[in-house]
Amino acid sequence: MVSWQALIGCALVLTGLVIESAASRHWRAGARADRIDARAALALGLPALGLAVMAAPFA
Image (cartoon, rainbow, N blue to C red; front, side):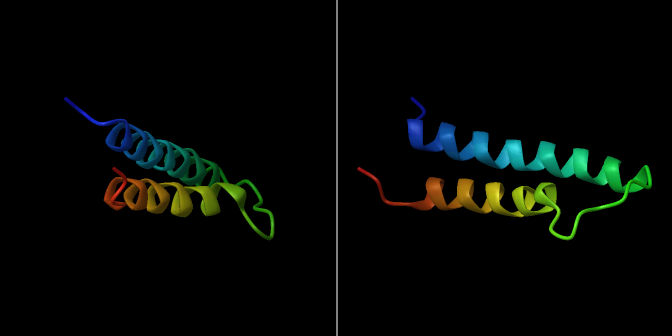
């Protein structure tokens, strides 16, 4: 049986990858980026958070 911790962690990682894909399509389309691109921050932060959730020793 899969734990909720693993499911939530995988969901966060996959969401980050989807956001990264959308951000790269946005950049390739030549759209102007904001100073702090929220998509780039989410693309880095969500997978890191997901891996941290999966590695955390919750009981």
